Image (cartoon, rainbow, N blue to C red; front, side):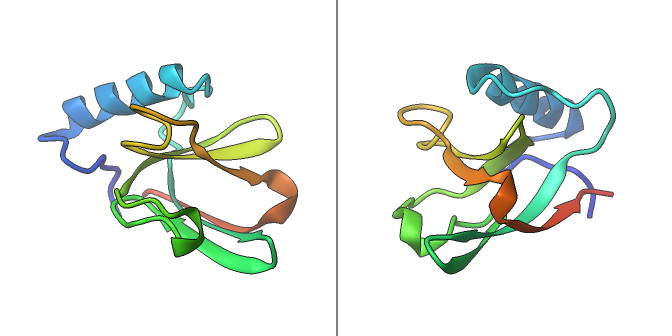
Length: 105
């Protein structure tokens, strides 16, 4: 699947939004086109799947779709409009709980 950010009208806007979110949550912007599309991890014994353009797992009570996922030092930051972009901190997944990472093509 090709890289996208939900609601972005084109690839340039998607790249701009992605970079802005990265800066806002203090995440490194990849120097390559290696962007995360889907993340599978365990949270409190529950397998969680976070995918760009879909709602986060119900356990996080988030009602808006995932816009970006960033790999940081010891944690992944899963950002929705409300969690990580506008109001609250992103959803966090510790690197030691990660089962699988899928990247955009």
